[in-house]
View 1 (cartoon, helix red, strand yellow):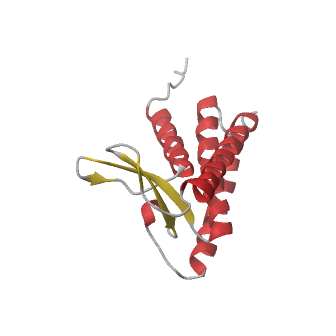
View 2 (view 1 turned 30 degrees about the horizontal axis):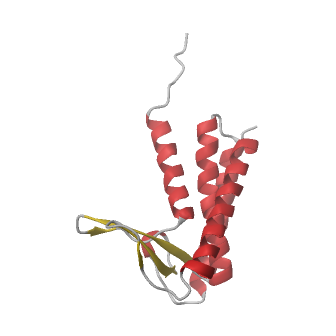
Length: 157
């Protein structure tokens, strides 16, 4: 039953992520540059050939292939977890994570890298650039953690 809740979320996130990247590639960053939006936020153009926050960056042809295979495995794992989800909140969180993983997988398959363009900075700290898919994965993980920490357990009679 929760598949019907989580899969539409995943489809919506993957679609929104790809649409935002297409807009950035086609219009906003043609040519690539830094666009200063506020004192703490810029739009940038970064090809991330690694994983989260640029870890494991590589110019090797095997990097995108390996990361794509790992991502497929994660998507399959999340799908089976979603099938067994017991709450709407869990299903939504898993849908957010699946949609983000699918969005970044599409990038990796079509560009051999993931496009990151959201750039936040404040108080001398500069967060690595990210995208809608990354944000969705992060929000999904936070929801899963919070739900597991504050879950109400039924007391046995």
